[in-house]
Length: 560
Image (tube, rainbow, N blue to C red):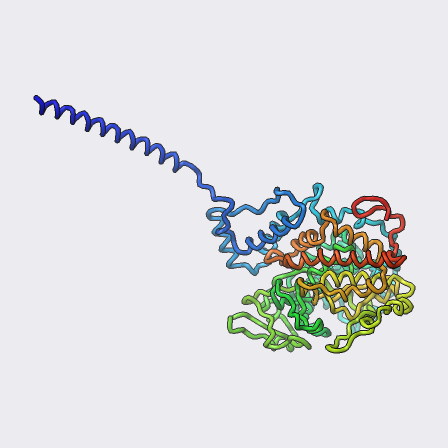
């Protein structure tokens, strides 16, 4: 009897445990099913899957937002997911030297790197400021460097052209030869729409500036420099370091300067200024800085990735250049050309293995059409390891300069001081000569050419570059007001420079200027304003008034 009762109770307990186990298994199954149905989202803070190039850009953008008055609404590009992410990695690793990819990355940066001020980015707000939209005097016929011949004049010279038919090929024959050589078959008329961007640039040069910042052709010209097929490459004569003259199918040309060292490398402190490397990113940055200062005196410059094999070696007709090509032990295609400095196998210019970063500057009109005069700078350095120039020994040197034509009657003196301020901001000590267009005589601007030795050091400033301002204590009012404007937090020079440089095609590979160089711009700008203030404390008539009737301060206040 007792055994029967124990058996029944044992069966009841086992049945209860089985039911409990079944219930727990069902609950566990429902829980797992709910977890598996939840979508998997990658964490936005992860950076392990971001391509290396994009990581560098994010760091650059991060610097931009931390050094300006930007709110935390500044957003970075989203992280690619799943298959798209793997595709992007593959493309980046395989085609990093592709210009089209660099351009796409640049477009993303332009959208992500802008700093907003009252609805505009700082760069947009700067160029909308009244100081960058001053009224201009109406241009007369003799204020243009080049003009298209009128039909009547062309008819007058028709007889002379007919007499030369025996010695000059006819137009159709010339076009046929051009097509064989790879040049485009073109038909240019007096209509500006038929002109290529480089010709529009030449026809837009005036007595007062190389280009109008608002001219839509400026964007077309820079795009043309960055994308046109290269038809020819030869060494350019003159200068101390290697430069190439590149030709395009529409008869345009550009001056090429190659990358010789990494962008964040500083000039050796033991090198003299005349022994320094020329830098491709210095030429690019100088153009942007000159534009931000409102000068518009440097020909447009863009960065570009070129193939040293297909775009130089295989198309050059320059035997001196072609003989210097070789393949390095690392398998990279290199060359060095012929020049005074650094043109040897010990200082080669190498692709990776074929891609090389370069700067391309728009060429000025041919000297036969628009002759230029070269002037020795009064503040030229001695270019000696032991000797000093006269201006370095005589504090009153500017008094002599002021009595010397053309510095005694034209705007040339304040033109040179503008150039000295530009050179100081970018650390350029290599300004021995300058040029002007002969057609305009002494009533014209000074060309700011050859800036390859700028931006060599960010950790050290060179106050002697500002000697013209320190000795003469003269500065254009427009220049002074723009400098003050660029020192304000809402228009900080480093911020607008960063935003301007991100528009260059090479910014898709890496920042054109490193952050220390951008910070140095703000530091040097503050020093320039200190020098002007010191001049005002000790001299009268420091400000050369070129803004009659302008009554706004940089921040929108009252009259100066």
